[in-house]
Every structure is written in structure tokens, then in C-alpha cells.
Amino acid sequence: MAQNEENVILHKWSFNCKFEEGDDPKIVFTVEDGVTNRKWVLVKGKDDFPDQKVGEAYDKLQPELDACSIACIYPEDGANTLEIRFYDGGNDGDKQQKEIKYTYQLPEEK
Image (cartoon, rainbow, N blue to C red; front, top):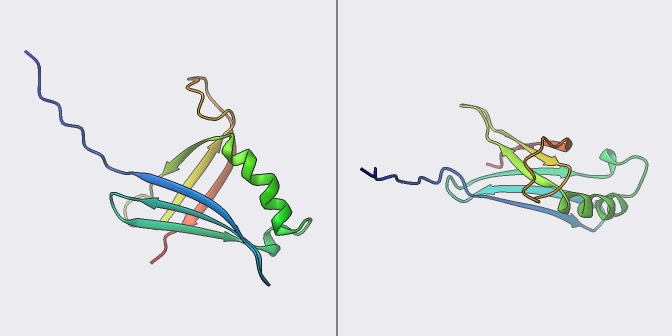
């Protein structure tokens, strides 16, 4: 006899990485969870890229992130920091263990 299975969606992630120009240029990483309505944001500026301009860092980083697969590690109970991991190899469906290329800790935006 078939059991009635119910799918429950716990999280619905969206990720964005953008470059903001101006007097204080920055790269802004944003993760939003459409189910819990929580949002995490990490801002990286010129102090994070001492060897190059922020725009140059973004131009190098963006295509690399696009080529990676992504995973969000939800905060433990009571924590407010989300971990986002970018794995080498993209979303090609390959089940082999992939290496982590980038990891970022994003604080929750209140």
C-alpha cells in the first residue's frame, strides 16, 4: 500500500553578489530565505582587497562564483551567522566530492 508522503519546504534560498561603485566601492553578498524571511549580508570593501581595486576583485570573483555550485549552511539554534560555500565544478550533477573554493560567513541582517 502506498503511503501519502508530504513534501515540506524548509528553506528557499536566493543568492546575490553585486558590486557597488562610489567613494567607498564594495562587493555585497546577500542570501535570503524565502520561507523564513531571514536575510544575511556580507560587505567586502577596499580593506579586504589590499592588493587590488575592489572592482578588479569583483571582476575576477564573479565568473568564478558563477562556475561553482553553492551550499548554504543554516545557522545552529540561536546563532545568526549563515555559512555559504562555493564548490569547484559547478552544478553539473557530478556526484564526486568537490573541493570548497570559497567560504563566507554572512551575519544576519536585522
